[in-house]
Image (cartoon, rainbow over all chains, first blue to last red; front, side, top):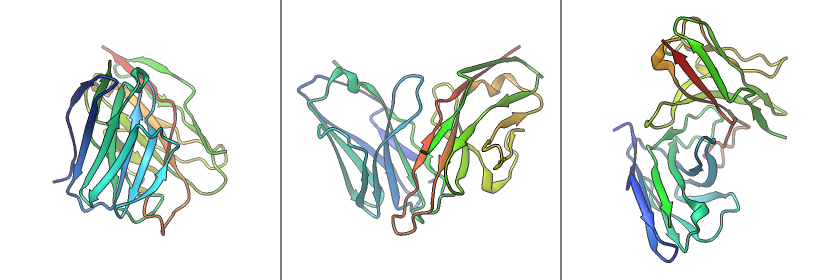
Length: 115
Length: 114
């Protein structure tokens, strides 16, 4: 399996809801990433997990809560989101060697709409 | 400051014409450069990276350290090349961290007309 998968594909939630996004990879990668992508914009890094430990939090609001239960899974828990949080949320993984030549492999994304 | 600049938001060409998507970077050190492509309704995927020195789907990119550029070129554009192209930079190797951080340019939309 050489792909990063994400579920759900689409998610509509109210501002008081709690939901979670899920990302999975079975390539043996040890670094996993969450990005936010607005329409016609490049991906913006949110979080990086390396060897199941949070390595980077790019000053993301606490209404976004990442979790890495094991080396293959990455979750993003959502609570009390705002309409401006509506975006495509991308997950990516890389081998985990820490080389600047490491390729990041992206999932198809979850299209989130906050009403 | 680390920055990737793609000066063109949109590049519109006819099928068979040469294509050059520009990318300039600012980084104090020896970065690794990548081109990622996002076709309509498909995931962001790696097109090519400098270290591999490959030609993928007829595209090539040369790293010019003097001009700090990594322009993407194809001699004859095809309609299926229409997509969003992102140039990205990865800075210093962080062995202890186990990850690399990508800095993306704003992207250039390539539209190839029949």
